[in-house]
Length: 149
Image 1 (cartoon, one colour):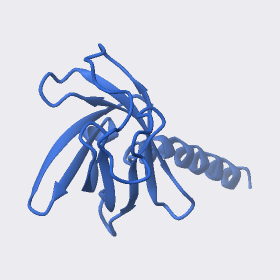
Image 2 (cartoon, one colour):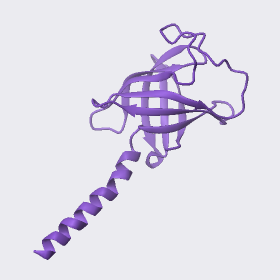
Image 3 (tube, helix red, strand yellow):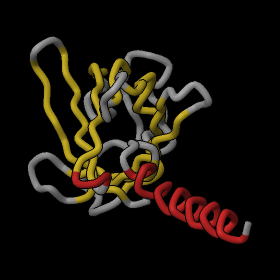
């Protein structure tokens, strides 16, 4: 009987130890964004999942030197118009694609130009980085964000 309990104990420890590795392959967490041209940090975005697994992402803070960018989204065209960029929800509605470590189907807002793009999120490098693809039709751009938490 002691052998059975010992085996269950080790299986439980192995399962708990695997949880952090699994969680890292998700976009959920705190991410540092990088400027496309300089690759310098610009902001931190917290991505969360609701109970249905749908993702949202909010700008938590600005990082790096102040480059004179507006604090509000004056070019936004929806309810976010003229709202502060800090605290703004910029990711909405992404869901995990069946059978893949890719989250898609949502939208991402670029608060610097007020445009929304179709979104695809792909954790890479063991979940330490996140490929963030925003596109309109066949055109788009991909940024790589760095995990903070």
